[in-house]
Image 1 (cartoon, helix red, strand yellow):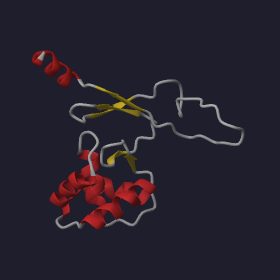
Image 2 (cartoon, one colour):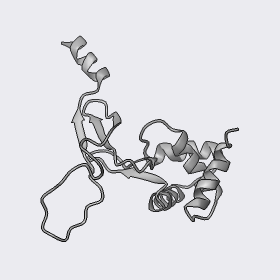
Image 3 (spheres, one colour):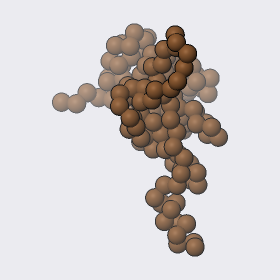
Length: 148
């Protein structure tokens, strides 16, 4: 039997050592059930459908706590608001369509995390690489061909 979404969220919060609150459960559920990479405003709307009122400040406080606890991954892509997704600890990268802004996950490009070997002076410890691929998604490419 599959665990109810809010109960599953409560379990994940407890496992991460966080206090279980309605706002945190609702936000974690909204992120987990949402496809793709959503911004704070969209997640707030989805969480409000689950729990009712949720202020903008509470939204950012909850997202920060979930990110710091390792339950949520925050992605900062230039020219876009911060996006949030369930943290899978897989060190994936992202593709961004220059035309429509669609963001897609891209598997680690080379080997194990951090997927790259930069040349740095001795003493630096790297644990993650954030790579963003930019281009055009299939839908936008098809639209461009039709317009040409």
